[in-house]
Image 1 (cartoon, rainbow, N blue to C red):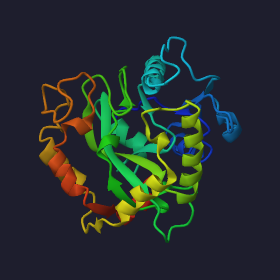
Image 2: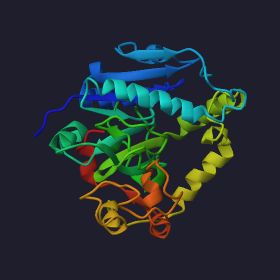
Image 3: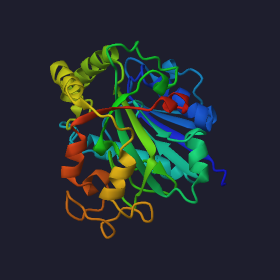
Image 4: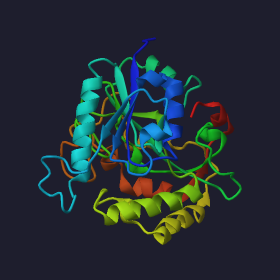
Length: 314
């Protein structure tokens, strides 16, 4: 087994609720000294005020990049953001063997008793690696979410989110985008990208209200869901609970053996697999290689994680 050096990276703006969860989880996996936070112009809750013990915080005190010619419409928000993130990851990889990047409402979890670090150490190589996206929901009987406690001991209901199969576990330098990476992507069904947007409904409304203000001030991703109204957000949640509950557990292992028959042997590239969306572009987003008819069938259901997940670090 290879013992590697790992770092975790996130970029925040006024993320007072989920940042403690991100920090707690990755500190437990990689150690606090190996966590890096880019604070992008927080105006209400700086990363330092939320995590006073954080050792590595980089502050960017304004929104507009120096070379952004379209600052008035901010259409290039994500392009500029991920250019900065990709360059920072590349620098960290001069010292680390692997860097994991997530937004603060996401964590990469391994279906492995020894957690993410233990699982990655067992791999012969990491490369640019993606897992399976899960959207986690708060059930009406669930208590409010506690960011300082294990996620899976609090939440078990989920749906699959295909566009959240993000290749953001990086064992080599790569340019990355919001949901993809420019390079061959290894797809790994033992890795789960856990998205917590709907994990606490009380916080969800507060966060979306804040983002609507930022959006109106041209301070956020103008092509993102930052502009979604509270009613639209609630409709998304209602659709989930109207789905039929699946009696099956973790169906994605078998599903991806059918969708990507050789994914265990070779990485996803335009030459190795059939792309259903977007032509042969350089940005490898795993979702573009999934048969939409097959994933649509899965989207009819909601799922519950097995009991053993309560003991998996999350």
